[in-house]
Image (tube, rainbow, N blue to C red; front, side, top):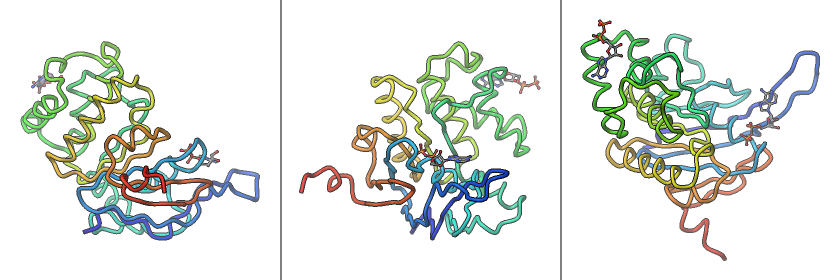
Length: 236
Ligand code: ADP
Ligand code: ADP
């Protein structure tokens, strides 16, 4: 079954006072089956970020439909969309942690917002911290952590609502190669253990080679090529 389906999705950014918009994404189709790790690779400005932000409607597509886990997100009411977003976790290049909250409380935040009771929050956060290898850092603040540890917190937070899909927006781009490797290993682990479908965007070939099953190449707002990773990197 397809976990993520983009059909004819495009995005044009309009700015006030300008008649012509920027067509960041031309109409694209993208299908990601359940359990797959799909990478979208391209140069800076190619439209990667726009594409991935259209999946959970952080950006509202100009045209097209987005379907995740069988539910069409485009066309949902605001409340229904907020519910549906619990099924879609996201991590970012710069982690986006709350500096005034501990590791534990960062991971707990989405659950607090969902109205989960304190006792259950504790029951759910602790194993997530164990999963990402930070059980001993629960009371630390983000400023006390390395970049790799911060991204581990962000991964635990993204998993807190028990999503079916994880979106990774240049998740290793701020990390050194060694730390990148460790985070990619963790993502692979999560993909296998939880059966989570992962869509990631990157400008780094190495990331795609290391963990993706399938890859799309994006250029000038168009998906110009798609292949299994083995075929993508084999010279003709
Ligand atoms: P990438 O993630 O591959 O670097 P982006 O999706 O960020 O690419 O950007 C694609 C194009 O859209 C670029 O030309 C960029 O300048 C433009 N763009 C991105 N965000 C906006 C915005 N909010 N308003 C106007 N133009 C934007
Ligand atoms: P309160 O005392 O305000 O009712 P709790 O007893 O649930 O709240 O937790 C107090 C604080 O302890 C929380 O804000 C959280 O930072 C931390 N905390 C709770 N459970 C754990 C845990 N299992 N591991 C680490 N820190 C925790």
